[in-house]
Length: 377
Ligand SMILES: [Fe+2]
Ligand SMILES: [Fe+2]
Image 1 (tube, rainbow, N blue to C red):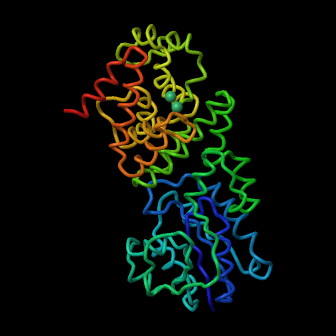
Image 2: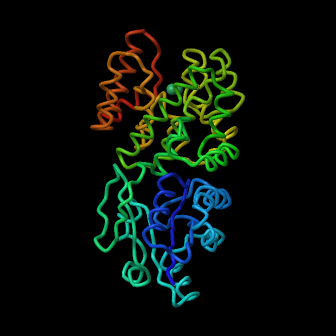
């Protein structure tokens, strides 16, 4: 008896997963197919969608998408999802093997997971428990261990993280998500869709488009520099969410909300628009339920800067300064610099902003000056 086991986070399941499962089923002609959505990949910090949503999407996008011949032999193994904690694949496979000692287990995983196999728990035992299958995904990096059998079917270039990044900024994903999965995501507002709807209601069209541009660039920069892409996307899309308050009311609003900002009253009098980053942080907490200190810090510091700037703070500062919708002459050079050297790009963006203030003869907030001085010290 041959059992095909398909494991993954499926966050969300996409056309690549469906193609991989179908290719493995064709190659192996298994007696049963077990789809195992992980509660959370033990190598990752979090799963963006909750267990109930991922179960529903795995059913809609993988199980129900199988041709009837395979569908009749397939089921979803929910033990990992319902455990409430990360479970190692080696433990799931050991359990499947104990439940059906005569079954020959074949485990299929996507390209990225296969390339990370060396980091999985107990790789030797894993190799004893099952035979391993994967397929190359166009554009994916990483070396796949030689003991993996390769499925030769052509695979779509989709990856879950890229799809999440596209969903987070409201870009089209119809080419890589099964329609049933797309409907579920839309209905439940997953992967930032609900947040986008709220934001669209808060901001004018231009500011909303600007936020999408900033988030796109922030996501790409996070991938380039190995920062958390979901944090960069959240900070990028929400960084101006407090801009819905008119500049004339920002001072009053900052006072009413008791926002902590040095020289708050002076700022309210001389340059009230500068308060919007602190108002945005406040709206992030209250309206969007953001509690991640890294995201809140990046939003708070995206306009004035600060003497202490984390990598994410700098990344958002740069993404906001030179997103694709910025039309000043140096913007495209700064964007290119951001992919070559993020720190240099941050310094150049800060210098640019300070030069602009000097040129206009406008007041410079002490935080921006201390941000600049901290780079010289
Ligand atoms: Fe802003
Ligand atoms: Fe902005």
